[in-house]
Structure formats: C-alpha cells, structure tokens
Length: 344
Ligand SMILES: NC(=O)C1=CN([C@@H]2O[C@H](COP(=O)(O)OP(=O)(O)OC[C@H]3O[C@@H](n4cnc5c(N)ncnc54)[C@H](OP(=O)(O)O)[C@@H]3O)[C@@H](O)[C@H]2O)C=CC1
Ligand SMILES: CC(=O)N[C@@H](CCC(=O)OP(=O)(O)O)C(=O)O
Image 1: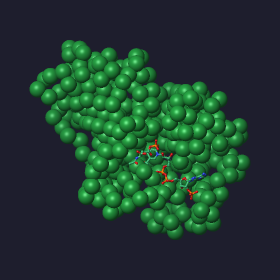
Image 2: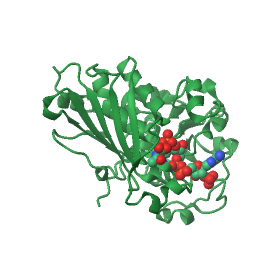
Image 3: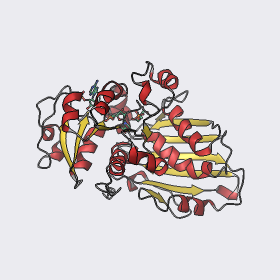
Image 4: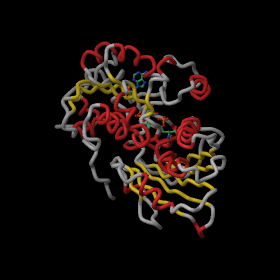
C-alpha cells in the first residue's frame, strides 16, 4: 500500500484528491491537514466522503507527515510547499506539489510573478514538471513533482504536436481560455460569489497572468525555440471545466494534422483526439481525467485552431497529480482514474 498524505485538505483540489484516492486500490490515506479544522472529521466538512473515509484533519507538520507517508500531496496556495518540501525529501518522503512553487525552473522568473523570493531555489533543478505526456520517464524516478497548472495543461497538450514538429510559427501563438470558478479555489472571495459569476462572462489578467511564463516554458521545451504567446483567460459561469481555443499559423502544410495528433496521443490514456469536425464540450470531461482535443483548419487556410477541454480540478490538478503518483510508484497509470464524466 502507498501511504499518502495531503497538505491543504479543506480546499477544492484537496477534496478531489480525497475522492479519487479513496477509490484507488493501492493507496491508504493516512494524513490530511488543515490549520483551521484540526480534530474535525473529514466527512463532516465534505458529506460526499461520509462512509468512505474515517479520519480527522491534523496540523500540517512536516516531521509527522514524513514519518507517516510515502508520498505527500501539497494542495496549498503558492508559497507553502517550498517551505516544507526540503524537510520531507530529507526524510525520504516523495512530494507531489499541485501549486506553482516548483513549476518554473528560473527562480528570478518565479519571484517576478509570485512576488517573493523562492525559499528552496536549490530544488528547482531537481523538480520534474509533472506532465506525463512529455516527462513520463523523468516522473518515474522523481522525488519531487511540480504538477502543471490548470490552464497550462490544456494549452500545452493542445499545442504540443504542432510545435514538436516545427509546423507553426512559434512567435504568433494565441490561447483564448475559459475556466469555471472552482479554478479560483475554495477561499472566500468576492469575485467568485454566485451573484458575481452567474449570468456573467469576463476576461481577466489580460495584461499578464502568472500561467503565461509557465506555458511559454513548456512550449519552448517542445519547440526547442523561442515562443511568443498571447494568453487571455476568462471566467465563465460554471463550476468546473476549462475550454481553451488555440490559434496558430501554419508554416508547413504537407502534414495531415488529424493524423499527426492521433499518432502523437495514440498511447496516451488521458488524451482523446476527437474525429474531424468535432467540438469538444467541457461536460464531456467533467469529473474525469481526460483532455479532449479537436483540430480545425477553417477553409483549408493557414490558421490552425485546436480546441482543448479539461476538468480544471482533475486533469488540471488532482487527477494529474494521481497520474504522476501512479507512474512514480509503478502502478497502472490509469489506476483510480477511470471515472466517466458526469452528464448532465
Ligand atoms: N482549483 C484549481 O482548479 C487548481 C488549483 N491548483 C493549485 O492547487 C493549489 C490548491 O488549490 P485549491 O484547492 O483550489 O485551493 P483552496 O483555496 O481551495 O485550498 C487551499 C488549501 O490550502 C490550505 N492552506 C492555505 N494556506 C496554508 C498554509 N499556509 N499552510 C498549510 N495549508 C494551507 C487550506 O486549508 P486551511 O486553511 O484549512 O489550512 C486549504 O485546504 C493552489 O496552489 C492552486 O493554485 C492547480 C490547478 C488547478
Ligand atoms: C478561475 C481562476 O481564477 N483560475 C485561477 C487559475 C487556476 C489555478 O489554480 O492555477 P494555479 O495552480 O497556477 O494557481 C486563476 O486564474 O488564478
């Protein structure tokens, strides 16, 4: 059995980790932390877990977690994991961080976007970016995984095949992305109140979102050249789901793009390339770990449009984290992740 702990168990990615890990046959959840709910049974806060998990929240304490756990998931805001991870690694506990603390390899860029110096810059070179479709072999050996952000997952999976084959102009990429409100987490915030998000639609952080450097870093690894991206996130009045519409300009058109995508992702259990002419829907991935893609080339012109949908809390966060754990601990990669999306 893999003994798993979760730091930040009262948030949305935390409760998704719990829901998914409970149905994993080879995982025992041994610790779940909260600073505010210590001693409270998990099922009191999350009624969906009643009858499935009988443990209480405890303080986030690295020595205790290291003693109890083979792997610790951080489902905490940025800036928390980087203070605790060195202690856990020193005691041979592996770490899967859902926050952005270890996603950017350059500490100066991290400081620029997250507004404080990085507390564990020595670990940035060791951390493995946890996008299995790119880094599977490195993930297998890793002690520390930096799970990709929700937007970066949807955008990178959509652009990768085009960039890996140098088919598009890497200086003219556009990602027009929409997210449900759970992407902002469970903390109380005016902007995610029902009366603020319902029957409303808006762009935000257009002049610069902290996912921009992360997406560019990943796309540059794929293209092995400099990349320029216009990234515009939007908040849509739904709870879960990301829909990214990606635009690129073809520079070579001898390749059948549908076949390229089908071949690139043929062996990937969680990337589904839809038939030509499809329009993927967020509800087709709601509650599951899939990224569904469709490729369009309007009027057979030079503009390629890729549509990419994920559930921000699953392939965009907790499901991808468990996919990484499965790879690290020699489990079947799909173990605990085979739920079918919920419609309606
Ligand atoms: N929501 C999403 O769609 C996605 C989120 N992420 C990332 O995952 C992480 C978690 O996100 P999400 O679940 O939405 O966030 P929430 O705000 O819903 O939950 C945050 C959790 O962290 C705990 N926490 C907050 N501060 C601290 C601290 N200083 N020390 C220890 N625990 C702390 C909180 O518990 P308590 O206050 O009880 O201690 C709470 O359980 C974030 O970094 C987020 O950016 C990544 C991809 C997608
Ligand atoms: C709708 C919404 O607010 N989404 C969040 C991003 C989601 C996320 O959690 O990304 P990180 O892991 O990088 O924090 C935002 O735009 O800040």
